Length: 386
Picture 1 (tube, one colour):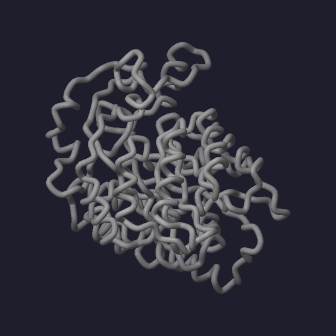
Picture 2: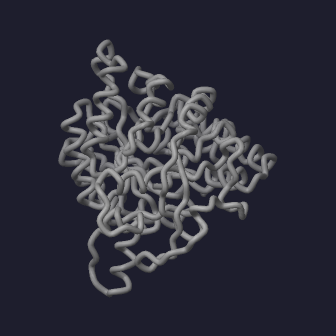
Picture 3: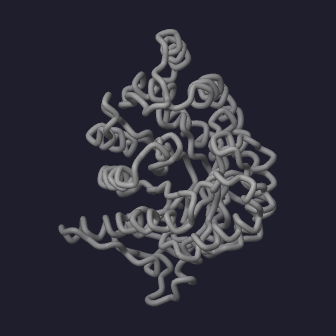
């Protein structure tokens, strides 16, 4: 499955009393669906997932799923400290129709998070998950930084299709890309090399039929009637290698031979593309450098308040316009570092409010911002209104 592009890891809106404000969540998701982002991540760190009860997490997943446009890839944050609870939430996300599970690194028992522990955890989850899995590394929050060597080893698993690397370490991105370059799968994409998921095909089929559809099996994406579950997974994995050295971009007119034939699946014109392990990043102020290092896109907190500004960096880079990408990066660099990083979720939510979405309050122990900090955020975002 393709994961290239920009993904906002959406926030969870709350009423002043701390209850989840589902109407605002729905409104935000509908608006993100009209932007050029590739998809939406639900229950990431900026979604305050760790602050939600089990039932609230399920309710948020359901609400966001129902509000998302069918052409956007849906990623569910399902990582919990134990493998069994991670799988339970992942299975629920699959039942709802999510496309990918994002599983953060276990971190509470840090001394026990040795390579053997992480290998066993992720392989167990990937073996049993009904969804493709991406690793989520966020050492600034967890205090644990999964080594590049371990990621490269895990990348051999056919159901581990990528990583969200939020450390901001561009050299680590480069190392993971180089170490996983040999991994190749076939993935179904649209005629214009956008992602195709079973949920998208089901939405198209139900629209044609005028009735509610069911999820299309992954086998349909591979163009076979009854493949084994492992083969179906293998054929639905990967990334388009955008930005990798010596790899031609899909829009350059030099697609790989496997992607030349167009087939009709549901109501979509599709083709096959040879893809590999995907590295997405989480530091907006280093997006351009990370793309040059080989990442295929990003899951950016800053995209929650400025999705178009983040997308413009990716689009310029994809078109090969390095100077424009640099200028677009410079435009957001200071605000992305300060608002999207230093000030945490309360700062991000105020920026979201300022740019016309609904941010609202965060849950304790996160505290409201002072008037001075709010004014600083508004100054930083004065020319980034989208």
